[in-house]
Length: 263
Image 1: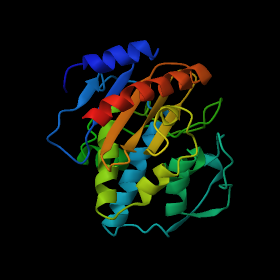
Image 2 (image 1 turned 45 degrees about the vertical axis):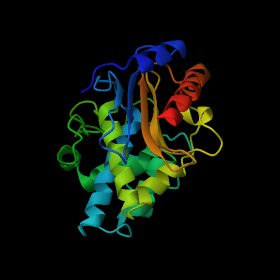
Image 3 (image 1 turned 135 degrees about the vertical axis):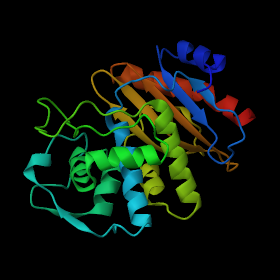
Image 4 (image 1 turned 60 degrees about the vertical axis):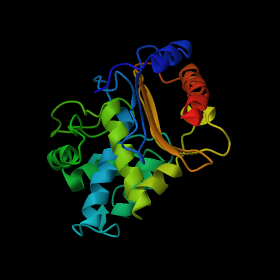
């Protein structure tokens, strides 16, 4: 892990991000040094954990072990609240690709919980480690509100720090470059765009995922500039998810954007 980059430290302080955990990577140019600010800090990932779950599903599909058209019945035990309307109700037979897309684009918690059952939390953790996500672990299902979902198999909190999130988006970028685009396209269609997205320029493309609870606020993804250059930008904060926090993310993006353009 590289040391803290003073440019990120200064910008994070100026934008009110507090003790942020930040990773900036160059997914199409491994020779370029990364920007880093405590990206290996252990911060609860919230819905950022959904990206590696999708990556594992995509890897199994690419290997021929599963198909995106495979079906699974939604069970009552996986029901929980969502920030956006969910099509998944008990008894509904969903396709794996449908679940994966909803999990990323609309941050659907029910879809996530169904996929955790299908893929298996221990198997997900093992697959993530094999993909280089060395600090990522899936231990429990997601809850959209209190009380937490009844999850007898839960074995702790999920883990997916900013450094692993950056690695995950690098994998998504590489897969898209190779023609396997459904994960990238689902992130590109992101429904929640109130954080970093507000600070980029109009012609920029940001395929990303957010994560929020009452205690954390995160955003990260693949930023592509109009000239075709791509960057991975991930920001984790231990801040209440509210309009002021969202504005701080946007300010950070506005401050980071000129630096990226000059690289």
